[in-house]
Amino acid sequence: MSLSLNDIEHIFLMRGKSQYGSEAVNQLEHALQCAELAEANQETPETIAACLLHDLGHLLAAERAGTRDHDAHTDDLHQYVALPFLRQHLPEAVLEPIRLHVDAKRYLCHKDPPYWNTLSPASKYSLEQQGGAFNAHEARAFSLLAFAQESTRLRRYDDLAKVPGRTDLPPLSRYTAILSKWF
Image (cartoon, rainbow, N blue to C red; front, side, top):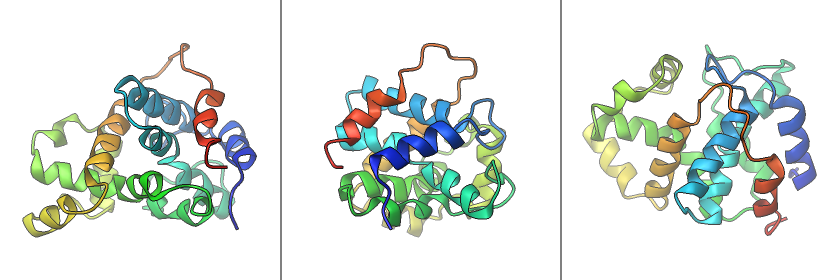
């Protein structure tokens, strides 16, 4: 089964108001802030789309579990959950950064040790659930993957996209318009 663009909009508008783990923003605010950061940094439409959709798996996993919010105390493997629903429409340049964004955090913790200090407490907690920082061998293997650089940039936007109380966020339609080229 695949998601239509209307399905994605519906999920964000209906379930996106749920809290983003232990962060001070909800899922929709986080997705919009992440996409906005990518756009401000003149990323490709594919990377902007990946930034919008990177945590869609949290919303789908919560829906599958019959809960409103994703459980911030367990690893729901959200980086994989949405992929089967998106694969029919989106290119690898969107899908791979989504799939790799958790590994990008693990990579950055190895490659750039001060990066750990920039993570929110919730992100540090989830990192431990996700396997912790990569070792040297894992980091090297990650760095050689296609879309490793894009996923690392997505990860940095992800870390910054947690500003509470923003009233100036672009509408979801700004980014679903970008997605519409593939649907």
